[in-house]
Structure formats: structure tokens, C-alpha cells
Length: 162
Image 1 (tube, rainbow, N blue to C red):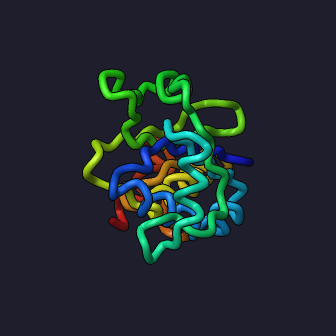
Image 2 (cartoon, rainbow, N blue to C red):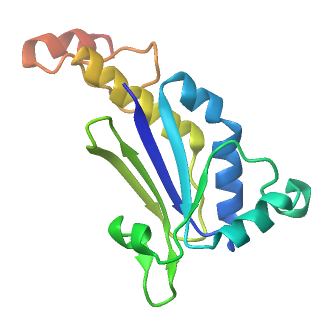
């Protein structure tokens, strides 16, 4: 089971670099669950290089452990429905896509608020668990916690304990 996590962002905001750094720093955790993390922005490859060559302590990205794609013609942002056409920028969109190419989760944030990498990791783990075991994950589920058998009678096992 390999998941693909696509993340679209705009480097020229103050929030996006914090997200891309957080995903880069946790890429090993995603690799451990067979998940590929890709980042994409409407900025050019030259802009990406400038951000990567700027140390983190000066507001740059520094060393990156994930690929950063340049969507200079905005086609990817448009295809994913996150292009703010009047400004030519992309909202921060996060897409969890499974090995069958099925979109399992979408998160789109307005520019001033960032996302939780830990929540994204939890979502991928939950989708992988449900696919493998055929059970469903309740709100706030984390690996090792109880799940629900999705049948009326069998679900009572979970509900009687919670």
C-alpha cells in the first residue's frame, strides 16, 4: 500500500514555508508507512532554489527531504481546484491519494492558517488501516486504538466500551 500525499502551496506567504519544513522534517515517518510526499507550488524552480538556499533561521526552507515541483503554468493548481485565478496563486491544498488513484482526503486552507502534519500522518494511517482490516476508525483514532466493525450488531462491541 503506497499513498501519495500531494501538497500545493505558495512560498511567498509566511505560513507555507512552515508547513513545507514540517512535512520535510517528518518525511521518514511517511516513508515508514509507504507514503510519498510531494510538494508543488506556483512559484518557479528558481524561486524554489532561492528558498532552499536560504537558511531556516533566516526564513528559508534550508535542506529539503521532499521534492518541490514548480507549477509555473498553474495547471496542477487548476486541476486540483485550488488556483486563485485572479491572483495566480494557489491556496494550500493537501490531497491524500491511494495506490488506485482514488482521492481519499482533501484539505484546503485559506492563506493565513497552516495545517497539522501529525493529523495528516494520522489520516494516512487510518485509511491504510481501514483498507487492510475492513473496520472503520472513530473520531480521533490513532494506531493501536479501538476501531468499529461496520455492522449494526458487531459495532456494539465498540460502543459498549466507549
